[in-house]
Structure formats: C-alpha cells, structure tokens
Length: 351
Picture (cartoon, one colour):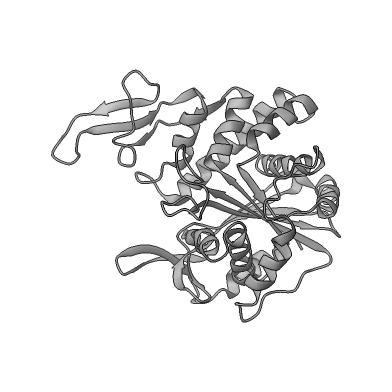
C-alpha cells in the first residue's frame, strides 16, 4: 500500500467528471443518470444478495469511480456486451468526511479475487459485466458498488462509470495532452498488431530469438504531445510492466487532463462544458440524483484538497495484498487472509 499526502492532482479530474454529471442533470432535463428512477430498485435487489453491507454514515460520503472499456464502433449496444465491454480497468473510491472536510482516494486493482454472491469467486473487474448480465442497464453499477462496500467495510453511497470512448472524447475536446517522461516507456507485448507506419510512438520490431515481429508502443524520454488515441494506449499498457504501474500512468494522464482543462478555462466556461456534455452523453453512467448532486458538490467544495490522501492496494513490502494463481490465472488476495486490514485502511483514511 502506498499512502501519500498533499497530492491534489487526481481529485480534481474526478470532481470534473462528477460535475459533468451534475450539469447533465440541469441541462434541459438530459442526464447521465441512465439508471434513473430504477436506481433504488436495482440497489435493493443487489444489496439483498449480500449477507450484510455497511450502514450509511452521516459524517461521510463515498463515491465509486469505475472506468470500463465500453462499446466500440459497430458493436450492438442493445444488450449486455459479451466482448469485455463492461470489464473494469479502473476502480477508485473517493471518500469525503463531512465533519473535518478530509478527502481521500483509494485505488483497487482489477485482479483482486473476490467472492461475488450467487456467482462465485472472480476478479473484481468482472463485477460490472456480471451485474449487467443480471440486470441490464444498471445492474453492473450497483453490483460493483455493493461489492466494494462489502470489501472495504464502508458504505458506498454512489457510483459513476466512464468508458474509454468518453475518455478519448474529453482529450479531443481539450486538444490533447502533454506527458513528461524521465525515462522511456516501451510496451512491446500488448499491441503488436496495432501499430501503423508513420504514426507517432509506434515502431516496428523485427523478430528475434526471444520476441516475435510486431509493433511496440514507445514513448521517449522528455516531453511528449499525445492525442486521445495515443493517451489511451499509454494509460492501458500493462503487459510489459504491471497493473500497478498502469494505475500510476492512468493517474498521470488524468493529471494532465486536469491541467489542460484548467489552463484552457474549460471548467469555468459553460459553453465549453456544454460542448463536452453533448459529446459525453452516452459515455457516462451514474446513480446520482439531482438533490444528491447538490449535497455532493457542496461537500466537495468544502473538502481540504490540499491535504488529500491517496492509497493504492498493492503487493509492496508494506502492502495489503499478495499474488497467487487460481486455475492458472494471476490473482491478488488479501495478505492477512481476510479483509480486516483493508477495511481498517478504508475506514480510517479520512478520520
């Protein structure tokens, strides 16, 4: 586990996404709350399959942020997807203490192996897809929300999901981002068939005794200007590094989105905001209602962002997870055999 103080860069983009949801609610009756009036019904049915879940806390609010692949061009969106559309690449819990105005973020790795009621043991990144298969149009949000509540020991009040297409659209709207590298970054395994001649950050690798011929995604040391497609490749690469490194790069990309948006005055410009909202209409899902959004925005405005805490569940020496294999698959498990230490972290991080 890595715990840092005074790291403000990631909370602002999350507030930005939540703010987009709020503006959708107020803009001509259009909303990203796709599960709408069914949200409470979905939640009650989902919560009922768990033995017990934490109770809501009056002095705290927790928002789950989920990043999913989403549907690609030409794929049928009418039913729950079957090609990884709903696998979660990013799972982050944003916590706010209403009494002392403290704020924190905790990242949960996609390979955490968990018990999903009425399904069995599976990686946590599958929860969204399993929920959508059960209750299409909102079951994925609520199953992931309930599962993180059970694991963390804190009640997750709301959940927001953003897909890859939405991520790319935001970067397009702000005109790309700049990534600074102290060292070169190379992904030589994951995208061997994806590169194209003449495109930035791609180079073709000839076959050798240890590697097959194919493309590798290469980001040199120094300043690198990336468009939306390039930024997504950078944020998703993990075969040649690790999931933990990938999470750090995702945070880096989000930081650059925040910086660019602030520099362009996007957040303070209603015309630009509404343009982004029009673009993102089909890419954000949430169960946050209008009255709840008003309260949430008030809490966020009061939060002591300069004292933000950030934690990552990992396998470092002082981490709370260990690596294992189940039927040949790589998984992560709680180091102490149960979730007691993990729940203590979640519970105490904003106290």
